[in-house]
Image: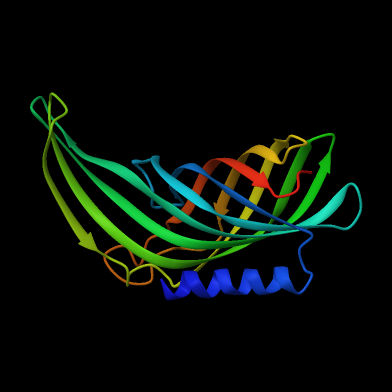
Length: 207
């Protein structure tokens, strides 16, 4: 919580010092997994993201956008699948994402591209068992917040549309640039965060 409050305070300070021309809010579902040499069998899991963004236009076409987002990432992997029982493991990694994006907009369409730094907030490793009918039998959750690296780096690309009233819809891809595991059973394996987001946003004052 302290990390999140610090990030939000920094963003609020920048908005007060004239960095941002406009303030907005955004959020929506995420669809994430792990990429890398040691990620066979991992599938996508559904999470969520949400936060605020600051936008400064350099001219009518181009600008800069800074965001502070709380994002649930991770992946899912089936361990065993039989006639009467299915087991899986789910990694849930929660980050505070800070993208710094080059923003281009014209006639409502917009494109964002740039780097992102992320700070791990919490992490868990969940083991699930289901019957053949889909009923959950057992769920075991382990706290692995100390296992991922404290800081993660990625690149971000978005495309979307914003109406004149400020409402927007965008699709975003985020690709991890470094291994996520600092400790634990996966420390020597190459696993990087990767995923898509579908976000609804509102820019105060319209576009």
